[in-house]
Amino acid sequence: MRTKKKQIHLPTFFVGKSTASTKITAFAASVSKITALAASAGKTKTSAQPVDGKIGGQGKEQDSASFLLFGSNENFADVFNHAVFKGEKTILPSDLLTDEGRETAFLRMKQGTRTTITQYRDIVRKLRKDQVFAILAIENQNRESYQMPFRVMEMDYLNYARQIRVITDRHKLEYEKKHSGKSVGTGVSLSGGEYLDHFYRGDRLIPCVTLVIYWGDEPWEGPRQLSDMFAASEWNRYAPDYRMHLLDIHRMSDSELAEFGDELRVVFGFVKYARKKERLQNFIEENRDAFSNVSETAVDAIMDLAHSSELERIKLTNHVKNERGNYNMCQALREWMEDSREEGREEGREQGREEGRNEERKATEFERQRADAAERRADIAEQRTHKLEQELLELKMSLGLA
Image 1: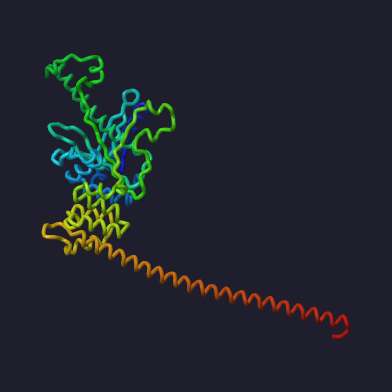
Image 2 (image 1 turned 120 degrees about the vertical axis):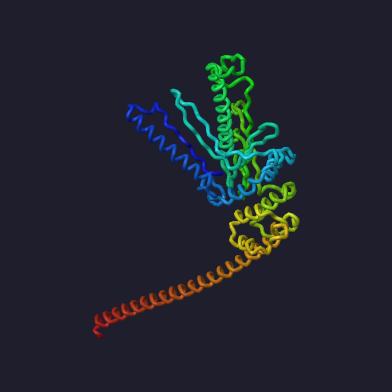
């Protein structure tokens, strides 16, 4: 998920004198301009700043991998069909249209003022057949968020608020044209509520469906719906709920992974087994056809997720590229795992050498401590001998023998 930025226009009711109002208005305009520039810059960057615990710090491998993968309508439709529609081919790639990820809403405040809130979704598509049926969005997480259902609801709410604003603005314009003689309008009389709200009986909103893709190693134990965030109360059942769709990659079974198309199966399988090299090798063998002919998009996603310069080097040598321009990742990942094992062995050898040096230092320190202790014992013995000699001399003198 990219960094969420809030753009705020200061309400005029906070202002006293007109000179102060002018200064604050100018300040608010500057803040708004800077926020807009920052948001624009954020959309053009390949990585964002750390927020919300996304993988790799938010220049995040997960986000860039997700943009690579789900920039493809085929993969976007594939993940929604399996994660939301239980494997049914409800969405076709041809039904999807790219939509901007910015969600902006104008919130009403006292005395007619308003605050503008802007948030940015990760990836958004419009589902369209004869008309727009839904807004579909993907949000990425690499760790649990204990307010995630609320955050999903908040982003969906902003989209609904924007839709209502578009509808009401259109109706206001139609009404103004009708009463200015430029248009006859709809010719339908309005009820009091329709006239005041500028939202008519037949107006409808387009539903938003947000899918959270969870890339983290640990199981998701956070809330999955708004009611999971409620304190225990007998009144909970009366409060409206809001459920989110969650895909937990590491908890998918091999049979579930097998239901995805080749590109997502390869990447999701790699994510699940990347830290279990033997199991990854078995998964590659079980899906040899898919791993033998991997698109460059999936290869780049895997490289981002592995954060491996070695994989990039293997790709650039082109010896794993096949005649169709795709990549044989069976061979590439085998080389990568062997390099990882060799690195592990070298790290082990270096660790052994370091442990040996530590033992040698410990032995040297032990011998030094032994020598110091022996010296201290010799000093104590010498002092005792000297004391005894003095006592013997004093005794002889008292007896007149000295």
